[in-house]
View 1 (cartoon, rainbow, N blue to C red):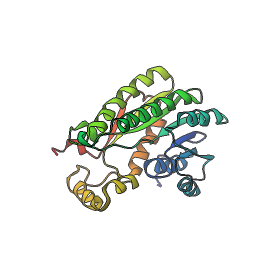
View 2 (cartoon, one colour):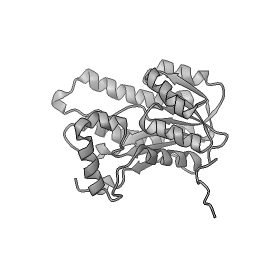
View 3 (cartoon, rainbow, N blue to C red):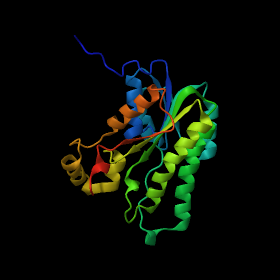
Length: 248
């Protein structure tokens, strides 16, 4: 007896907007949505990279802009031709810097852009997402453990679950959830770690309870599950391979 694919057709007839779709977790989620029978609208900052990613996905449409540009974000949702079922945003990366190196204008920009972008997606998509559909944001778990250089990231790590829970009440019956990822083996991780990437992979393979590195396909699988399970809202879902269980 052949076992059927558990994700096949689970999103049949549904449309998902993926913000940050040109690489990493966003691109892998777009692939997963297509494998589940759904359609995708892909958004990314870099037009060339987005165009290249779209060749693999065959989306309904693409839009190249920075999601931190709230005017452009509003226009994007206004221009969508109809309702969508889900919106996923991976936009907004971590900021690592010790206090002594901080520039207050840069700190203000980082907090302001990230919070305004998250709230902007909620505000401008609320008339486009169907009841029972999902707004799904990607955050992280690394900032839960205090360390030098983690001040900004820790503050954002704490803020996003509270923001998610409140938005779930404000936007009901649209569902709002947060995926909090640990280390994920993506191009962003590679750019941050440089020649230390392979050493970090080896460390995680040896120490994580799952004995492997979390990949973007793992995050994508969780994202599609949250989209499909209509009992889930207002919650934060950790995916780190047990990284938080380690003593260091």
